[in-house]
Structures are given as structure tokens and as C-alpha cells.
Length: 314
Image (cartoon, rainbow, N blue to C red; front, side):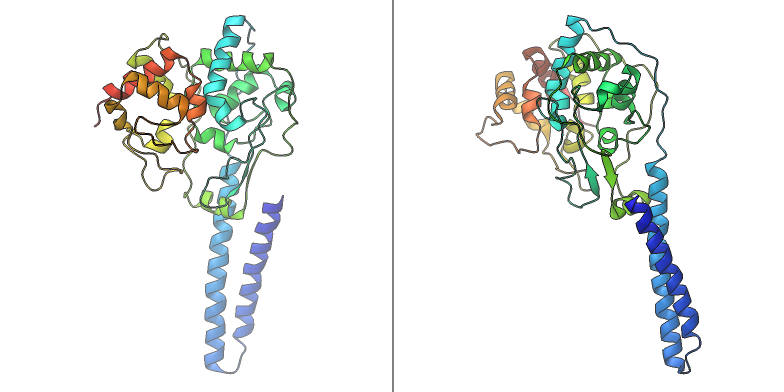
């Protein structure tokens, strides 16, 4: 609602500038007349352009849609255990270790484009009222139970979790006790600047909506399984598409070239992920989610290592 009010105000200002321009035409002094008309025209174009971008942003903000799959997840001990492993090593990076959420995910962005709050995923939050299919859609396509766009969620690679792992996460969330407090209000809110940037195409593209089935390779300390793990972990969002280092224009932070891992032993890689200190004694940046990644088991970390050391750059 505040953004709608802001857009209406901008449209009113543009209309006022047009009126001022027509009034300037009646000024006797030629210099004053055309100066007034010119200034009014420039301001009208500027305000109208911003208004158009905001309106486009509002359309984009409300344009994401995907059907809710028909799904009922069975709560088996094996599935819950796998869901806990995924949540600990991935979901907790945004939603906190206990999955109680509450943090503003926009705090590390260089420009204030709005407020994007990590939801409480325990039964104390709204998910208790959601169907399994609605939670699946939120993970796979970044859309909540009300059909609203989960912006930051859609920027991540959560959509690349396999169907089985997504169902496992749902089972784990269903098994949790209520903790923390409900996340208040709408989770994701662009401000006017954010809407204008969205309308101008200056923000990263959300991952496309998909209905395809996703299967993971067999779990083990293999490069193939490591490739799957890196597909949903957001390593490429910081370290670049080929993991050769972040580039200007992507969401911050800009991660270094992960080719450095080829110089490490498996033991050094595992220790780095679990301690936050690399083999040269350098502390990893706190924006790097090494703590969640470090919660992976030995086979998973070995799989990531195998993929990183064997990956061929284009």
C-alpha cells in the first residue's frame, strides 16, 4: 500500500508539472516563459519516467505464478534425517540455525531496495497452515501460500533441490517443535527505489518457474554428487557462473576464484569448511556461509571437493 500511495503522489506531481507548464505559457517575459516551460517539461518527463518504472516494477512484483502441486509427504525417520541435513547445510544460512528466521536478508545489499525477511519455518510460523504442496512451491518456485513472490528465495538455487530432497525438507519442517515468534506481516517488500530498479531490469533475474522433475545422483564422495550439491548451494551466486570468481553486477559479495581448492588436500578443504580458516590461516568472510556448509557430512564435503578439483573451466 505505501508503494501505491507513493506512485499516486508521483503521478500527481507529474500532473502538477504539466499544469505549471501551461501556466508558464502565459508569462509575458519570453525568457521567463520558455524557461518555465522547459523546466516543467524536464521535471514532467523525469517524474513520469520514474512513475512508469515503478508501475512496471509493481506489475513484475505481482506477475510470478505457478500451480501448487498435489503432494502429501510421508514423515519417515529416513526422510526427516535427510531433510535435517539439507536444512542445516542450506536453509539455515538465511533462516537461522533453529530455522526461526527473522533476519533481514537485504542487509548486505549495497543499495536499500526494500525489506526481505527470512520466515520462521517452525510450526510457530505460518508454514503450520500451509499444505505440503504450498511449501514445495515456495522452495521450488519462490511463491508463498498466498501467491506472493518470495523474492530472495527465487534468487537462490533452492529450485534445484531434487524432488526427494525437497520432500525431505518438508518432512523435517513438519517434525520440528514450535520455536521463536511468527514472522510479522508480508515477508518481502520492495521500496519505491527497488520497484523502479525492478522495472528498469537493474536487479538480478529470479530463477524461472519450473514444473520439471529433478532427481539427484546417488549420494557418495563423487564429483557427480558434488556437482548436484553445488547446483543448489548458492556458490555460483558469489563465486561466478564458472566458480572462477565473482564479477561486478552480480549480487554481493564477490567471491574469489574457487580454483584455489585444487591446491588443497581433501583434509584441508574439510577443515576450512568447518573452521572458517583456510590452509594459509586466512579467516573466511562472514558473508560466506561456511558454517552451514561445514555441517555437511564427510561424504558430502568430499563430493564437493572432488567436483571443484576436477572441474574444467571453459
